[in-house]
Length: 294
Image (cartoon, rainbow, N blue to C red):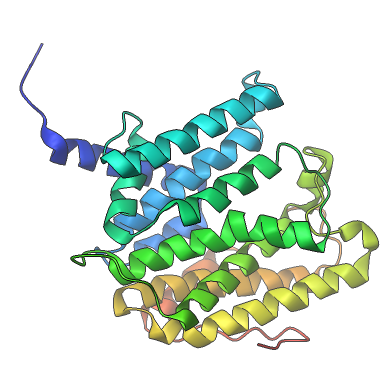
């Protein structure tokens, strides 16, 4: 058995590879968009996605399938948050995904002001099944908007000597893009959320009018986010444009299909076209849905 020292650099690289494996396994769409990032922000965004995905899996099925009840899921989630905060403080974790995230958080200025709301929203999934407008907004802020803000911290600060706050207009754009992504996924997963998890995030039991209101809000958020993408660093714009345009295409398909029986998807050839358009430097597409406003 070899006892040669491995060094922190090798451990960091292994943690980063573990995070990349998570996004590759769980998301073809975000995996594609992430590949359009430059080498400066790319590993950090993968590190964020990996931690977020692991936390989400604790509350969205796999932990329950493993035999955990709600109390045990809560304990595992709490332990993950505690380890994340400790790793950010000390710069190391024996959990490779947490270690990768902590490395990004320390370099890019991600702290408890962003991780706290995220884990709070994950805990909400263990205790709240039906949301009103206020609880929906709180949930979306923690589960999606702060993830956009984490990525923005990466876009602005990766590779810099010390992290600085992002401009206010970029903060607003990141929040609105994250909100749009989350609401699109709520619409796509409506039947699964209702049937398998007993959850209603959008109040869709109110009927078709409520669904149109949600789609109008999504398109308004996408339009507002599109307006500030040109202000992002050059090595981030293409990836954000590709992700934005994918969700704009999903919104259009959801608007056309008022009662989808299957999860709405964008065909792979269309995804490739959107990615190519972003790679060539075209700006984000403005949503064409009714009620678009900023």
